[in-house]
Image (tube, rainbow, N blue to C red; front, side):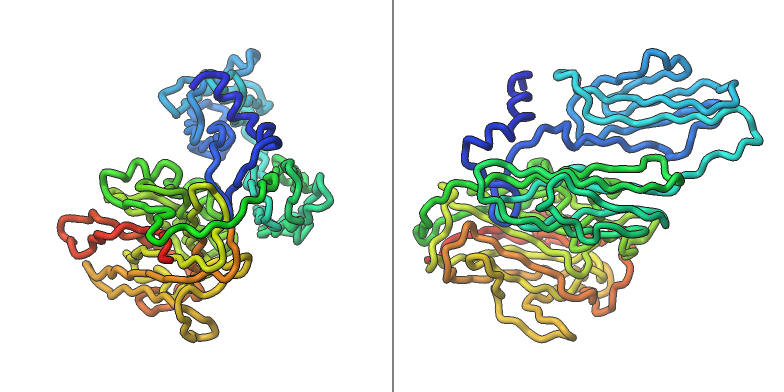
Length: 470
């Protein structure tokens, strides 16, 4: 990709002010982001380097090809690079004073910073008590929402310290706006009816001297309103979106979906920026949303995170760490991106297979009718909840079970897209036991054509599809 193309990607927001766009979310389509916006660094340790010297390994994730920037005055360390791994070698510190350097990660082509990390080395005086900072952070750094969306979720991690949130845009209101300790914060704002993006910066800060960094900025970007198009009723048999889950397609399916358990968004509310695009035909997305901050809620086996999204060896998308209020979102659009007219009859097909008994058992699948969610299948009464999809798992090897989900619905109102949402409505596991902590890497598999040679019965020959019946 040329520099000019990268600059165009970087400043896409300027172009959106003059052209129709459809942002992420239930009423959206994919847009390309500059890769460097999501760059981050994983360090081999969060501790200071001892005075005797040592090595720090930094792994750069989601970054374009990069160079390393080391301050010219820093002669007490050296850096080497192998692909995405940076090894920092630190010499012994003969001074009693601790020392610090910030290493920059620079886009090799554009020569701009995409992320950085710090190296701190203790002084040599042994009787000086090292500073122990409390944990404090907030995220994600950037949130993008559709023009019609009116809320977003951010998270605060705070180790028994007080914090507050300020907003650069008075219309963007955090709730709660202050607190103590970990919290999930809902930010509410009005829908955007203008042809320009709306941007708000929320600053999460503390006055505590027990933290290393006292403030974090979170930028929420609300897309410009798209031009209205007349609703259409596609011909019967029209395929709006079709996916093919198989081994030969695993790399393509994983392009925007796979993440590691160490990814800071793997446990956070939302979709983590992950989605699976149709790889047969049509426009749409398959997404898996965390319904809560799982790490903050204490439902994951700490210190080992167990939540992530990935595509398996056999091309089956798998969310790990299902829990109550998580949901699956299937979205499909017309070729012209026009709304679907009232009277359009939609059909969805896909199959799910739990690989562990503690995958959630009871789910409610709904469809979007105008701006209202309605059950897509007949509901049943559970213990204080309603459901219409039940997943099964019998204890023992080879006892996974495919469940086929196939609703057909008719729109009563013009609707921007074909959208189906399936939500876990109970923390009962598929084996019938209540799940309080996610204790192992259990996967909810979107079943595909290929599977282990020893378990051919798990193969699903039909493709996941959203199509028009009439």
